[in-house]
Every structure is written in C-alpha cells, then in structure tokens.
Length: 361
Image (cartoon, rainbow, N blue to C red):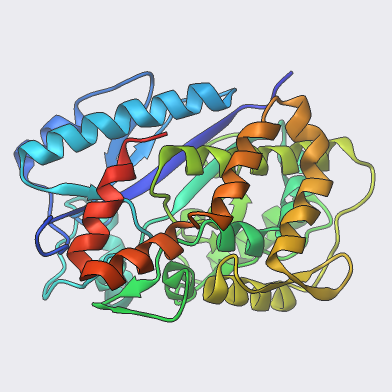
C-alpha cells in the first residue's frame, strides 16, 4: 500500500508596492478561510499577516499538486481583489514598525511567553506529514531522517533576505528558528518509550509551552499518526513543495523497509551541517553522517537518491523528483531566485517575480 502524506504551507500577505507584510482584514479573512477546495483548507497563523494552507491526505504527486495549485490560485485571486499579494518566502523582506498578532488565546499566550521572539517571527515553513503506523515506526523514520535534514533544508532554502538586506544565508529562516528553546536536529532515540520520556522531560522543564513548541526539524506529530518534517522554507511553487514531500516519503519508506539501523551521528555535528545548509543552500558542502566526511552538495543529493531511489521508483515519483533536482541547478532554488530578483529591482521585484510562480505547478 502506498504511504500517504500531507502538506502544510505558510505564506505572508504583502503590499505589492512596498513588499511590507499586511495584516489580514476581516473581510479578506472571511473569504480566505471560508472556502474549501478538494479537502484543502486555509488557516490563520501567529501573525495577522500570515496564512497557512493545509492539504487533505494525499497519495500521489498529481493529487497533491492539483490540490495546492487550486488552493493557491484561489488565494491569489481573492488577495488581488483586496490589493495584496500572497508571498511564498521563508522570511518577510522587511519588518514592520509594529507587529500585529492573530486574535486568540493561544497566540496571546505565545506572545506573552516569548514576546521578543514572537514580535520577529516573520518566518514561514513547509511542513510535510508522512504516515507512520505507530510510534515505534515513527522513531525509526525519525532516526533515518536526521542525517538528511540539512540537505532538505538546503534544497528548500528560500529566505536569503531579512529586514531589507541580503543576509549572506540561503535560509535565514533556519538561523532565525534556532532562537526557540528546542530547535534543529532531534536526538537519536533507541525506542518510542525513550522518545516519549524525553518529550515529557522537556515539557516539565517549563521552557516549552506544550509539545507543539518542540521545534525540531523532524518530530512525531502530536495530533496525527505521522512524522512531521519542518526542515524546508515555504516554497515559491507548489511543485517544489510536492517534490520535497515525495522525497521525504521515500526516505520514510526506505527506513521502514530496511533492517539496518540508521546512522546515529551526534546531533551537534548534524546541527553544524544544518547551519552550513542554511548558509550555502545547494552551493556548499554537507556532512555525510554515514561516511563521516564533508562532501559537495551535488554528491549529497546523489547519496539521498542512492538511499531512497528504489522507493521513489516504486511510488512512481522518480521522474517528478528528478525534474525538481534538475531545477536546483537551473534556475536554482528559491534563495537563488530571490537574490537574482533583488539585484534586478529590490524587494518589489522579489515579490513580483515570486507572484508569477505562486499558482504554478
């Protein structure tokens, strides 16, 4: 049976002239949140200028692409009627003078708990859910994914600009996220019981509001029978989100099918790899946790294909993912394209060029 998956994408609403984040007006909110298409829904996020798309349960690339494109197109049409644009970027291009939060007790609690971090939480992620039958299978998949999370973050880097200037990083969102109390690469776990005990200890510490605030780039979902991977920035085009989801699904499939335990490289070493991925995207080097050496990004991409290629082929996803990987070389990932647009015309050009891709496959 083909393993199911789901996709969550976060976006900003921005002024097309200034590229500044725009809080969602009540009328716009009612239109965006009230329309369901093919099981895909829209939700508010922490900031009043953010929204999130959540797909239904998907089994194929075609199903996921159609769901996201249909929803993105509807969002774009409604937003243009209100003179704003949806902006698919891991970071806002500039920070407003004041931060407006979405109304609600949970968001108010987050602001009260970490006001300085919350005020600057102008970041958007791509969250991929992949089905696992139980916690034991989830921990096995989590261990297998640890070594690939830096590569996923680098491929999905789409946030090179922050507060009005290039940062020198392909994914500033990844760097920014490290300010939360629990972030980065999760530890390796021997059993599901060890995982659960660690979560309970972390919550008991008082440094986290609840399990939903564990910001590891991969974790077991609190509310669904899935492993949730949060390593990539939100993506400019729907097909990029889907390709990353298919690759992650194949990694989970491979972990489930093999009897060999995953590499248990130290979290601090993999966290360095995550920092390198945030810095260089697909242009730099990565730590190969199995060979325990540093290799070029291209070699690391080949390594993940060697690892998960059989499952990609079995799922019928091999060509879809291959086309995506080719696109990382030309025209490049989101970070590369954002910087090209920035050099041509600053923030306004970045938003305009991203808008051309927003509702494309």
